[in-house]
Length: 515
Picture 1 (cartoon, one colour):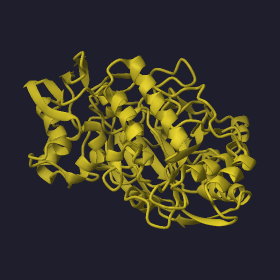
Picture 2 (cartoon, helix red, strand yellow):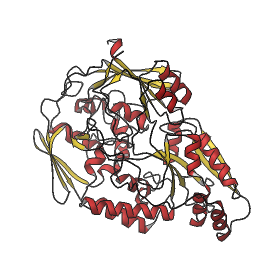
Picture 3 (tube, one colour):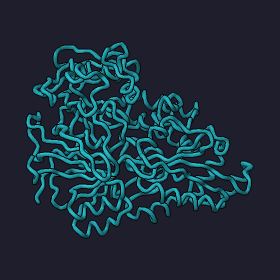
């Protein structure tokens, strides 16, 4: 590879195994596979947002055209001709059917219980995927599925609907393709190598990419779990692009000539309450905690110019996000103490929490938990946080559900698909089946989410999701604290041709380097 044409990208955690439908390592893995694997539809990474919070536009990609029935239960994809996987396999209807059999057809010999588990939210209404002819595929759903296409664009959701070579699946089996899963993207997986920050990967340009060979000869994704190390790598020219710079001196970086774009990735840093824990089972206690945490100070002191206090469980950059969402819980320690008294909570209570020490878009959990602890101490709550050093271990354990004695956990997540709210809070997704890690089981919320995810009219669907969000903020199964506005991405003046969109990963296929 031409060393002068290798793009180097700093991540905040190492890259997990590359096999998108079986990936559960967080956005860092998704940021890699965005360049190696593709879906039938994708976000339009060539179209900059016209308004600050505009969601990405979903466009046909490996499909040339998409026909959707009025009831949104039938989707017909006409595939793009001339596309091949990195191992030479042809993209045709059979390849698509095989890929979806892996995640949705329990009778198929290529069915993977792991991949199916990770992709359940995106395909749970699918009843049949069949080839109509060699280049046309029909998807039939048991119920209206208006979020089907937008959810299809999600990387490491966990899991993904990015397509993998059918040759590899048949040769290696549905669970044997890690780092051996050829996609159709502009870059191919080349090698994995160790660094002081963890496992890194190098991609090489796909010489036969259907859109033409990219200018870059390769991309290296390099983990730097420590923020100071990421910033220094950017300053020293070790990397050209860095993710997760919130908390750094962004104005200093900008003064040095680095581009620090302001945009609205669909991202939240939030607390998850364990609703099985008697200490926080009373909503008045959860509301007291919400009033006690000074989210404005949390944002301004720890991440100046980078984050915003969150007022909604629908993140910026998602279709139903409301920029004028009501502030339900202004900072008010007096009101917080009154709520605790109403709930019969004694003068001093100890709550236990768990958190990762670092990881995928985790910001600075240690500093955040310390600020939360200081705020809660003002109302008589002593917070004890147990930190986990390994992000993947933390996330996998968190997904299993809150353990007895733990009152709350933290998570950084979000999607450009509103279906995410269903994924993390509907009672059918309670851990360990899904990602409702605090065991929320609210029939009113369930009904609102059911209506939202089956509503074919986009305006009505938005209203349903916003009503569900209002219910979340009223009952507080989770407490949104922060969203990102500036600093999720920074890059050198030498990086040209990058369009930044409102997403948690970006697409570098069109990038050139002027160095």
